[in-house]
Amino acid sequence: MRSFRIGSLFGIPIKLDLTFLIILPIFAYLIGNEVGRTAEMLNTVWNAGLVTDGLTGGLTPWILGVAAALGLFVGVVLHELGHSLTAMHYGFSIDSITLWIFGGIASFTEMPEDWKQELQIAIAGPVVSVLVGAVCYVGFVSLPSSLDTVRFVLGYLALLNFVLAVFNMLPGFPMDGGRVLRALLARTRPYARATQIAAEVGKAFAILLGLWGLFNLQILLVGIAFFIYIGASSESQQVTMKAAFQDVSVRDLMTPRDDLHTVSPDTSVAELMRRMFTERHTGYPVVENGNLVGLVTLDDARDVREVERDAYTVGEVMSEDLRTVTPDTDAMTAINEMQGNGIGRLLVVDQFGDLVGLISRTDLMTAFNIIQETGSLEPARRSETAD
Image 1 (cartoon, rainbow, N blue to C red):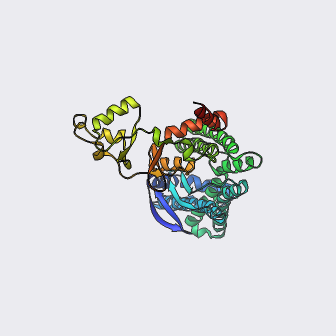
Image 2 (cartoon, helix red, strand yellow):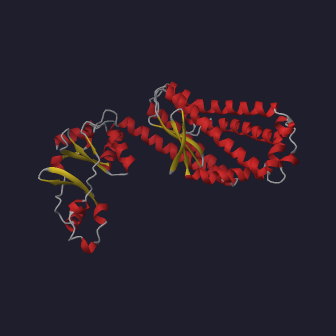
Image 3 (cartoon, rainbow, N blue to C red):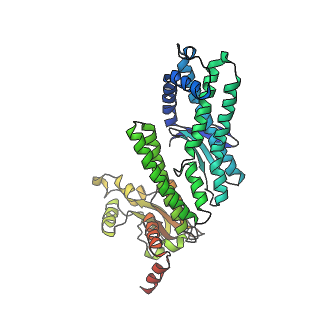
C-alpha cells in the first residue's frame, strides 16, 4: 500500500493509504444518502425519537454523512490502538497503524506465538469498539432532542462500532475472530498447525462472504472476502515456513563459493547473456582478483540494447549496492530480506566481507519442499555426502 503519515499516537505512526481518500467520500455519500432510513431504524431499534424532517433537508444529510464517516474511521483507529497497545504491553513493536479501503491495519514487527498473548491482543480491538460504541450510545441517549443532528451521528456510530466488534469476531482469519480461533487451537497444538487450521476456516469463511456479497451486489464485501482469503493463505505459508526453517541457517542452504558461477567486470554483456542461457543462471556474483565487487542479474543485462551488448561490460551494468547475509544468518531472516527488498538472491559473506556463497529463492523453496516431504533437511544432507 502507498501511504503517508498524518501523525502518531503513543509513539505509533498513523498513516493514510491512498485508497482511504477514495473510500472516505464514498462512505460519506452513502451515509448521507440514507440519513432518513437510518434515522427511522434508530427510532425503531432504540426508540430514539429523531425527527427525520430536520435531518434530511438541505445540506444537512451530507454534513451528517461526512461527520459519521470521519467518526467511523476514528473508531477504527481506536480499535487498532487496542490491539497495538496490548501488543506493546507484551513487548512487541508496532510499525504503524494504516487506514485504507477496508478499514485499518496495525503492522506488527513480530506476531506473538504464545496463545494467551495472542488471545488478549486479538480481543482487545473488539473490546475497544464495544467501549467506543457504549460511549457513543450514552451520548446519544443523554443529549436533548434539540441536538438531533449530534444524536444521529452518535447513535449511528454506536451502532456501527457494535457491528464492527461483532463482525471482527467472526472466524475469518486473519481477522480478530480468526486470531482468537488460532489462539484457542494453539493451546493443544503446535503453532504452525493451529495456523493452518485457522487459515482453512478463514478461507472457507471468505468464500461464503464473497458469494454473499456477490449475490447481493455488495462489492465491498467481495473485496473484504478477497483480502481475508489472501491474508489467510499468506500468513499460513509464512508461519509454516518459519516452523520448517527453525534451526536452519543460510550455511545449510547456500551454494558455496567453490560451486558458484562468477563473472569478471570486464566480461561483455553479450557473453554474460550467452552464459546465462547455457548455465541456466539469472544472477552472478562479480569477482575481480578474488574480491567481490558486485552482482549482475538478467534484469541488468536486459537494460542494454541487444545491438550494444558487445560494447558494454558487466562492470558497467552490475549493481554495487549489495544485499548480503552471513553464513550464520537464519533462513527466515534471509527470506524476509529477499521479500522486503524484492530480490531473488543474497550474497553470503564472512566477517571480512569475502564471498563465501550465494543463497537464492530457489534454494529456499527447494529446501522447504524437502522439509515438507521428509520433516528434515538431513536426508538431503546425507544424500549429498553419499554423492
